[in-house]
Length: 251
Ligand SMILES: C[S@@+](CC[C@H](N)C(=O)[O-])C[C@H]1O[C@@H](n2cnc3c(N)ncnc32)[C@H](O)[C@@H]1O
Image: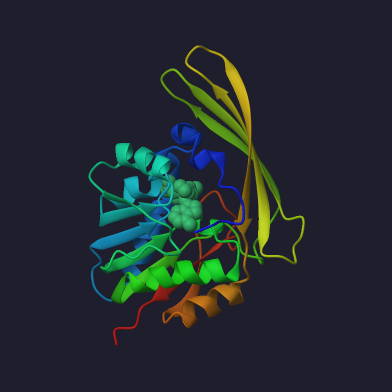
């Protein structure tokens, strides 16, 4: 499938740097929120979870302790990173808009990867994929970074040291045209190689942004019962972020 925007370097030629940008420990608290939400939304005790857009597998590294997980990503480089962190999980290549595994799961999870859906049509296709892979009585959980209602421009920095390499980044999030369905995240990465040399890479991520009503409409249109839920995290102000739930009717 042809994308309108070039894919971020972070998920391709820079994928091996991902674990130094974002480490599994950073995800422990939110993964626990997703675990509880999945369990409380399913009509039976969920055992199997499909994650679409698993990236480096940081959430999965926590969720796999509770569920049998299949991890799908469009980038073979990111799948390789996740495979080394989560060797016990099944990994499959696929685009969340078009992948068809011909099986269902108790839950389907799409974390921040859903932000790469930049049009109504893309978002609808990804949610349709979730529906087709969700068992009756099961749940789909969508966790976008922002909605139109909760978006705030921001500047963040972070990074980690590895054994012989290190990474620090600056992340600048803004929405130059609030009337369209995209916003921009510009990254500058400082990459310290094992010989001590440091180089700088610039990487633009074009992300999608939709209103709460659009989310609910699209999730309902594909056949789920939809609702929004406040996302609770100790580092976020209450009410500053929400996730979306689709429950697949039993009949
Ligand atoms: C920020 S990373 C996900 C990190 C993940 N939430 C974790 O817990 O480690 C975003 C991922 O979305 C993937 N992605 C972007 N567009 C996609 C698509 N159309 N289908 C599947 N994966 C996609 C990228 O390749 C990238 O690996």
